[in-house]
Image 1 (cartoon, helix red, strand yellow):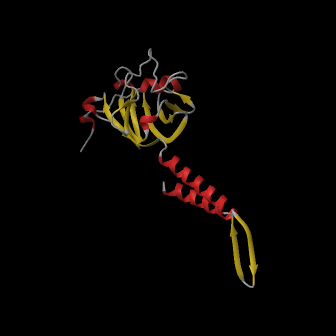
Image 2: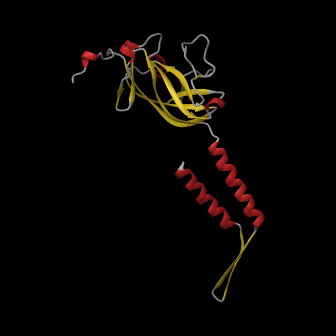
Image 3: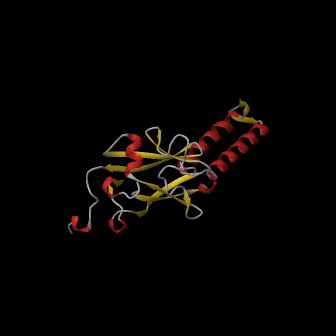
Length: 199
């Protein structure tokens, strides 16, 4: 946010300088005449831009809320959430909790990977396919958090990929949230159990 405001201030400063009507240099004295009407318009535009940013719909973080793996365990590798084919139940590995701002005002939420709408071209997390398997869709948990489910089969079948990294993003009312959701598909391995780890 700090960098965004800095950019806006630079834009505002540049715009304000452009409102100078005349610059007179006389006997080493600099006189600047401003068009106050244009300057006020610039200030109003700047204020409107800040308000729009403050009220925008944004995702700030996500985490695994619950898991179908043994012991309700969430697995990660290098920051990517593991989706084990052998561990999913009803095409679901995890329920993901998304935290952000003004998310309750979102009408349409799509999960996108490599330009492909994982939720379906005519459907979304907020309006899932009734014949599909998105049993836990965009469900409000608190004022600023929502839940949705994800599983190996949902990503693998749409992307035609059985193993490897997948980066998804969420579209909020047609605008990319810019926040990456990182998953790793694993077709052949079982989810580890406690005895798999050494101490």
